[in-house]
Amino acid sequence: MPTWNSRGLRGSLLEEMINRTNEKYREQKLALIQKVPTPITPVRIDSETRQITLAYFDQKSTVDFIGTVQGVPVCFDAKECKTAAFPMQNVHEHQILFMRDFMEQGGVAFLLIHFTDADRFFYLSYSKLLEFWNRAMTGHEKHFLMSEIDEGYEIKSNGYFLHYLDALQKDLLEEGK
Image 1 (cartoon, rainbow, N blue to C red):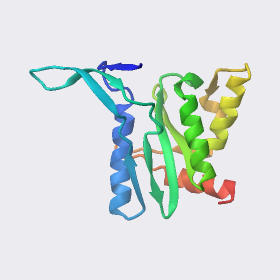
Image 2: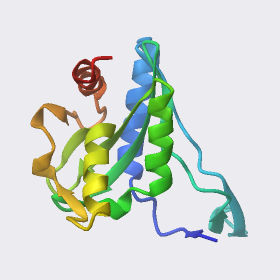
Image 3: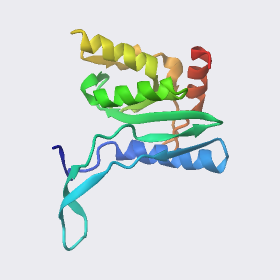
Image 4: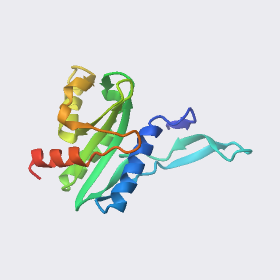
């Protein structure tokens, strides 16, 4: 069974930016999106700080965020990558399957990716993600390059918010939804 050992929260800055953005979207009545908690069972708790120092995952998580944007159901995962080559091992099969099932129910699924060394953020549609996934599963590149993502899907940030609704709208228009 997988375990979690507190080594710092990878992706927590990106997730915090998304949380702040989602709160702003809620206040402006543009969207209602929430962080999906990952169910864990604590194994060891520091008695002084009351912090969990060792735990195991109760089940596989699906995606990081789920909600609705102007009546459109959305789900997405937040990923970070240090280099300009995003390893497909950072996306798990159960996430691909959940996103596929979500899309089949009329929703929109995507990734928000932060290439940390370049400090650039991108929206990656499910269809493009699936293209990279299939490429990796058929013995080809096990990663994709930042340059393979259409620059029209780059998300601008002011260091506090991450406005991704423009990229979502572009995706919806291109997918004909």
